[in-house]
Image 1 (cartoon, one colour):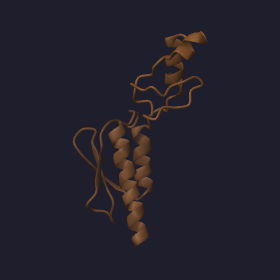
Image 2 (cartoon, one colour):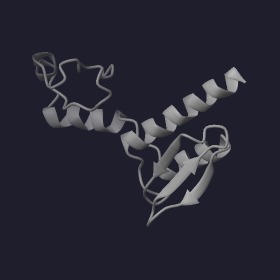
Image 3 (tube, helix red, strand yellow):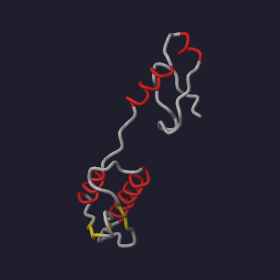
Image 4 (cartoon, helix red, strand yellow):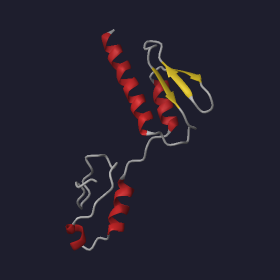
Length: 116
C-alpha cells in the first residue's frame, strides 16, 4: 500500500503502481474515496503504444526481423549481441517490461556510440 498520497495530488514514489489510500485529511475535506481514486486514475500517465517503441528502435537504427505471430525481433548492426523482442499489435499498450527493454537497448547503444 502507498501511504504517500495526499491532496493535492503530488505523485507516488511507486509511480502509481500501488493502490491509493484515503487519509483523514481528505475525509475532513469532504472528498469521497471514489472521487480521490478518479483523480488518481485521470492523472496517471498512459503507457506508450507498441508502434511508438518500434518507431524509437527504427529511428535508432535497429533492424527488424519477423518472429512467430505478432512477435518482432529487433537487432542493431553495432550491438549484435542485444536483441529486443516486442510482441503485440501496433495499437496495443506496451507492457512495462517492453518499455524497459527498449530503454535499456537504447542506453547501451548510446554508450557504445560514445566509446567509438
